[in-house]
Every structure is written in C-alpha cells, then in structure tokens.
Image 1: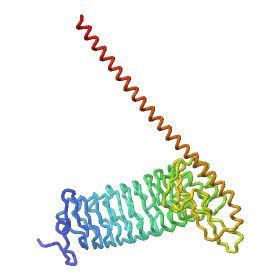
Image 2: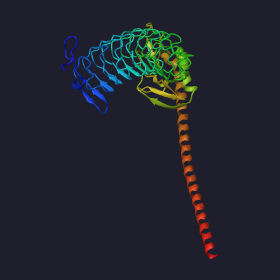
Image 3: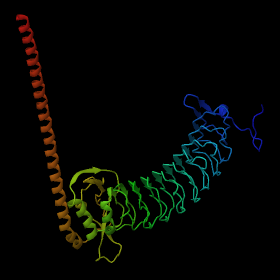
Image 4: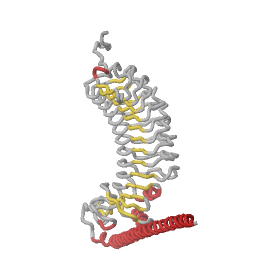
Length: 428
C-alpha cells in the first residue's frame, strides 16, 4: 500500500516507524525526531501518552490527531507551533493534559479545546507569544484545575474569560504585560486557591476582583505598579501567602493586610519613615508573640527619610540597621503563625545630617530594646517548654515501669493461686 501523502506530496510519517512505542506503558516516544507534522497513528493507536516535544511542528489542524483517541497526555512543547485551529482536539476527547509550552502561539481562538470538556485537567500555554485570547477560549472546560499562561505577552483579558472553568484551582498569569484587569475576571471560581499576577504592569485592581473566592490561599501581586490592593471584605479565609513586594504601596495602606495573611511579603515598596511605618513595627513587635525568626533570601522592606535641610529634594537616607532584627540576609518573623519579611538593611545613599540622626535615635533605641526583650522572653519560654517535655517523658517512663511491675505481680499471684488450688485438689 502506498504511503499516505499530504497536499504538497510530502510523505507523512507513521508513528510506528518514526517513533518508539512502549507497549507496556502505552507511550509513544516521538520527541526529538525532527518531525514537521504529527505522525499518523498507525502502530500507536493504543497510546495513552504521546510525546512530540522538541520537533519542528508548525501547525495543529482538525485531523492532526485522528486515530489517537486513547491519548490522555499530549506533549507538544518546544516546537514551532504558531496556530492551533479550533476543534483540533476533537479526536482526542480523553485528554487530561495538554502541554503547549515554548512555542510561537499568539492567540487562543474560540473552541480551541472543544471536545475535551469532560476530562481536561491541565493546560500549559506558558512561554509563548500570546497577546490576547478569545472570550470563549476556555468554554465548557468544567474539569480544568490548572492553567499556565505565564511568560507570554498578554495585554488584555476578556471579562469572564475564565467563567466556565469552575474547577480551576491554580492560575498563573505571571510575566505578562497586563495593565488592567476586569472586576469579573475571577467571578465564580469558588475552587481557586492560587493566583499569580506578578511581573505585570498593573496599576489599579478593581473592587471585587477577589470577592467570594472562598478557597483562595495564595496571591502573588509582586513586581507591579500597584498603590492599593482591594482585599478587604472579600469573603475568603485568611490567606496563607500574600506577596506585595516591589509595588508602589505606602505604609498607611499596608496595615489592613496584616490581618488577612499568614505570610506577608512587603519588601521593595516606597515606605517613608513616618508614623504609619512605625505602626507596622508596633503591630509585629507588641501586638503578637514572637515565636521564632526564619531567614530567607528575600528583599527586605526599607523606609526612607527626606532631609528637609538639604536643597536637593530627592535626598534619601535609609534607616540605621538597629531598628529591627539586622542582617544582610532578610529575616522573616513568625508571629503567632504570621510571617513577615521585615528586616531593614543598612544602605545609605548620602550622609545623614546630625539633626536627623538625633531625632530618630530615641525611637530606634526603644525599638531595639523592645525587640531584644521580646527575644529574651521567647528564648526563656522555649527553655521552659523543653523542660516540661523532658519531665513528661520521664514521668511516662516511670509510669510504664510501674504498670509493668503491677501487671507482673498480678500474673504471679494468679499463677500461684492456680498452683495452690491444684495442690489442694491432689491432697483431697
């Protein structure tokens, strides 16, 4: 039988010949085969995993996967794909995972994933050149739980674009070019747990963006241009992680976030050494019990003070390093299960004036003394806790020995009574 031909008279590769098929795992290894199109399914009809990564495939069409009806995981990463036609996956309606990372896609069309509505769980579209997507790009994908759209060039998200992805738990939109986002973008995503919006160009978030997301646990909004984040009265339980690093947030807007997150990252924001910044210190140092200090390589928050006696209006002096736990390595304080990336690193752009130093010295000394006092009490509490545990262990051992001795004595007496009864019987 002659080999199948394309419209351009090129020989279409056959999976059984061009690829290595693992019958035990039902896996077709077609990666790095210099393929410029999806091979015919002959010889791989039972495949559950189809690996086509690192080839030269440029387009996915309606008949590309004809015959691969059992495939559950499809890897098309690191090809030259620029177009995925609508309904391209109709013939692989058992798909659970689609990997399209590191290609040249620029748009996601209506009905791109049609036919996969009842099984699809994960889509990887990261590291492409996607600038926009259709309003119905993810229509009907009610089982989708994970969606990677990071490291693309997305400038705009249609309102309600994720409205039908009701099972979505993880959404990454990091490293894009978003400047705004509609209030209805996440509406109805009651299972959403993690949202990454870091490294975009967001300046404002609309009220209600995170409203009624009762499962939300982690939000990353770092490396944007935000001056305010509407997270109050949103209906979700306290977040496990809230990352607000490297934005344009001021001290007076940070305080409300302290009560809604277990881990709060606020480094890289333009805090002024004013009363509001001092209130943040007070909250962590005096209103909660310091349990321990964790160190991590994260950027510490800094506050700046302006020298009003200097003719240069943008002259900045960073606070001395003895205001908070100090180290070039930032510290993360665990405060009643709340973590904060809150050390202040020493870094002076100019020499501060004598007046400024004298004015700030009493406050800094007081803060340092209170911190070391809290640290001393924390260490004493830890020692008492260890001593208590040691005593409990010793008492438990003695109690166990007493129980064993008592049980042994009871068994001995019982055995002795039995022997005596037998002897009495023999005598009679």
